[in-house]
Length: 304
Image 1 (cartoon, rainbow, N blue to C red):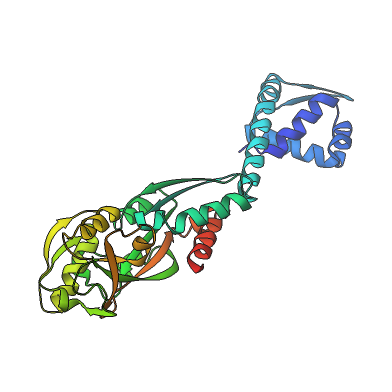
Image 2 (tube, rainbow, N blue to C red):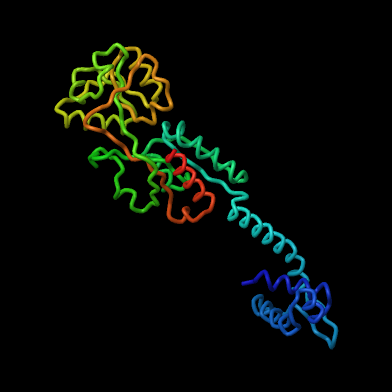
């Protein structure tokens, strides 16, 4: 294997015409130059220099290697500088995937802080709900993903749990309480707290497939199966449907925070329903400075 340091020595010898002059240029001794040239010749398996008394000239192989050495060394220098820039957060790229309510609340604050601290780091954002977002991380389609899991959710519905994340680095961010959403004129609109069983006879507006599965599970534990009239992944659409008097819903507080609930009113639901919001990455990616900085900023955004 040809080493870059040996190529640098060869170029110095070719430029100066002697081991001693090359040593002075490189800041090392003549014997050290001689030793490195012998090592380079052993690596390529052919002589590179012809030594005649005090004179020294390149063989045909030596000339070819010197000709290529400039480009090789320049490429290595550029690579070293780029890696140093990434390691020092003067450059770098992070591919972030988030579910919609995280994209509209946690992500903007985190990315603004990241850009202010490290303007050379670029972050791209794509939206996906778990478990698809977690699959994207494992498939190499992103570097960090925001995900969530419901407290007490049964594994049978396909929800991600602790065991499914065992191979990932998990950064807990916050616990997001779910709240009820009813039309302003609803009989329970001004109630302090509402048992979910009190909504058993209402038409329901359901969210994403995972959220829908959680809703059915919670309602069935309360003794009824919800009548789901509408289902949509779009939180503003859920709020709009409730505000129009077409049903009731249960939404995470993060989702409510990002939407103005016109015509609708939030109520506390009992028993308490919560989901854990986390940032996930792969163990090797967690060591990349730009990824680590992104995780730190997401945690700071969640703490505010």
